[in-house]
Length: 78
Image (cartoon, rainbow, N blue to C red; front, top):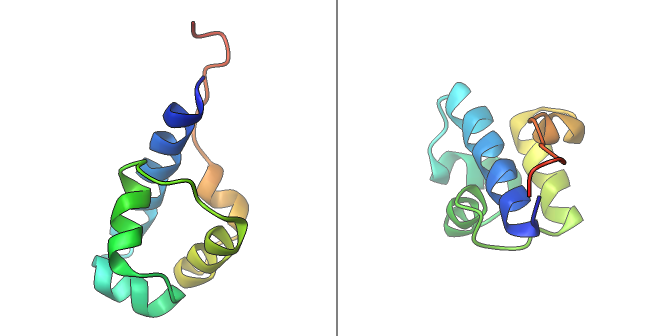
């Protein structure tokens, strides 16, 4: 698994959690003090994410940070 593939999986998981709570980018941004355009970029796997941002996103979703990483990884790929 590449770094870019990991970022895409993380982004998809974030989007899943955000939409489960019926949050727009703007509403999510207000909850976690992260710019809405940054949330969009994270969900698309376009940016490297800082630990501080992960913690803010988890707080905004009222989730434990480990829940943001609850996705399958295929280490045998490639």
